[in-house]
Length: 167
Image 1 (spheres, rainbow, N blue to C red):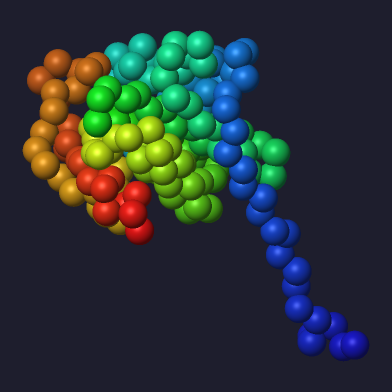
Image 2 (spheres, rainbow, N blue to C red):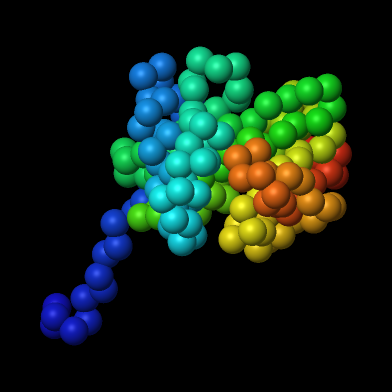
């Protein structure tokens, strides 16, 4: 077979979601910080966000870790209160942007929340991530104060789950 007619084989990307291991908090926290910093924030801003971006696998939230080809590629954390789920974190390592990791983590949150009886998935988004959440069919419903930066406001999104759960 001539060299020009051979098709290149792309390595198939294997994405899987799993619960975090008890010792992964520091590693997942650093992933969150790298992801946030990729939007151009300076060191002082990132230092102010560190506590809010800390991942604690034993802290009581529902957490999913995304692995791509065995490498930790993203993390999402959600809490539930009654019929409302709050997506507290969704971060993808910058090396894995555009590979479906964020979508997989968002789908996990949507499905997990619906299965647990939530009727709404709510979140505060970084302004740089607003377009992603709009693509996921969440709608902006207002603004919320930042948990880390006094005076800063974040876009507030909600996604009704009743239609999602029945689809």
